Length: 204
Image (tube, rainbow, N blue to C red):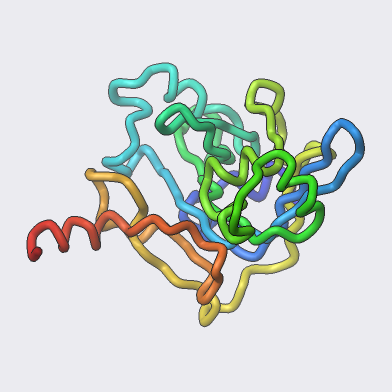
């Protein structure tokens, strides 16, 4: 189980190393659900033009600036996204968990989030929150190694298994290579890296 100390450093390095880890969620009935992390993104506000924290979003800045290794949530289009705080307390930085490949408790996940194609169950940051039945209000700002929601990890994946791209859905900082994907995984989110979208707009 990863401890908060693991996250007390550069979120880009953390995002890369989290690939292949297992996110474990145990509900109030003792049902275990888990999935392998197959996609992550880093946000490092001191050097990240895409990060609103610390510039014009005071509440977001305060939330992200807590001690490292705590669960965070940010809403995108009204949907909760699961993140972990990084760096030292007082610095706004985090890693977003963008997609999982389900392992344990798939039947329970399908009760939380019924889908036609199982591949769509957890292949996005909001999708995985709903599939695991995570309640943001009871999890936000709690340690990442809580028994009912934690990350199991052994070692970083070898370079040949990791694909590096720009992040998804941003305008500023869209060229930064801060998204990490398990190469060949069919559970990666369908989002297109922002840099590629920008290039398509310039060259239709």
